Length: 340
Image (cartoon, rainbow, N blue to C red; front, side):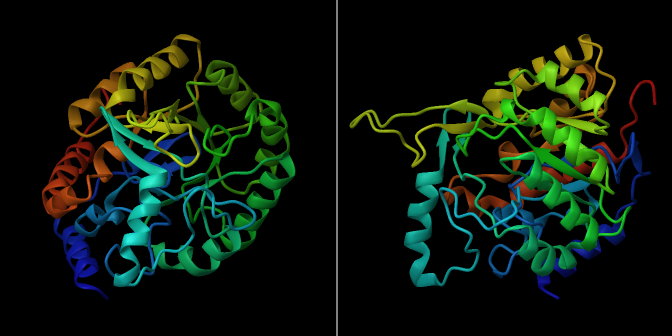
């Protein structure tokens, strides 16, 4: 066991656990989860970043979160616009940073990314990564381009993971970075794949799609909860050349810049009459951010790029960033909604 893992286990033992939270069929340890992709698969093969993409995670007890959401996994491995490789020798780090620069850029008020569902594939995830994250409560994010692919994904999860061993399966039917119109398949995905899942299903919504209509479809087809919102489609150009900053051209905007959009979507979902539990995400860094989303109508909140990403030199301050995250986690563990 690594020093970081031992430290996190001590943190888990030394601080009281919160009572479990149920959002319909979705079982969470508390109301704070992590967003898809930010921590990879919950564990990695590299000692430098043992939990995935963010070095900050080395200093945070992931077992304490309500749930950890994986990177979106697909039926087959995908390079996307980045890479599936998660172990990089020191002499290859310049190449890694170059790849990052083509898939992730810091912009005003947030981050623009276009990883394009780069992942090792569902079989490799279930074989090589999931068994090492059993101390965490996991939400497995899955993505595909047809109803048949989503059926295959849930059946593979069913076979490998007994019912009740994870929090849920999240259907990512709203990602902009794979250049696909999910409106054409979403109803058939829900109709065919949700009934086949032995685990609760969460539908991830995008503010760029008909999120109120998709929430109604989710309720109709037995979805257990909603994630709101996915990243917002955006574009940045190099002011010197006019060329897009990202390899994909367009990317998904996340971070502080989209918090007002996330709050609006949650409020509009509630105003539309949606009764499904909502896990809200978009710009969350502090307990006050969480509380705003609760007041808007969310049942839980999800920390994404605003908390887990930093500029490359800024990662030297990872222990400081992690202390802030642990502080939010402690407050959420003791939070009781006004009607709860």
